[in-house]
Figure 1 (cartoon, rainbow, N blue to C red):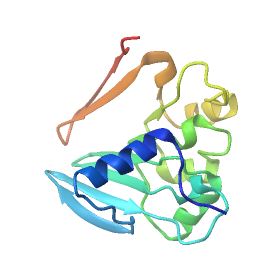
Figure 2: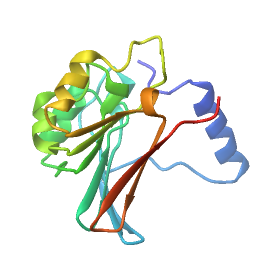
Figure 3: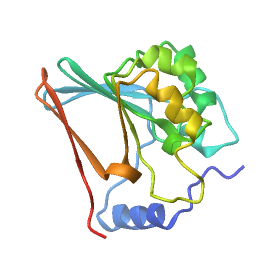
Length: 172
């Protein structure tokens, strides 16, 4: 199977990277400091037929606050990531694959144990995201659930101790 994304946005990004003389480095498991934050990258070890399951998971820790960003990761990759023993626990979870029923499985959520969850999806999208069963599952874990289709852009601010969140509707 061809594992190269072909969206227009992705192609524009590649052209922009080339025009700036930059290069792309394939993600691999690593950890580094970014300002006062620790950033960890988690990648799958197995081969998959679905490009979504090659998503790089990013965990950002700022003192007492942690954020897990999962891309389009589905339950198949979630199991792969968990089998590698990565610490995926996080206060804030960006739910996988736009809130699809194929993501944010119970086993994964039991390890993340998020207090806040965000589903990023467009209003009235053709996939029906977020799927109701995923919303229900996330609400069992996260006391605060935000869906961008409903509330707009979600911004979390951390000072290493406190955490605040705001939502902002975009201009149409």
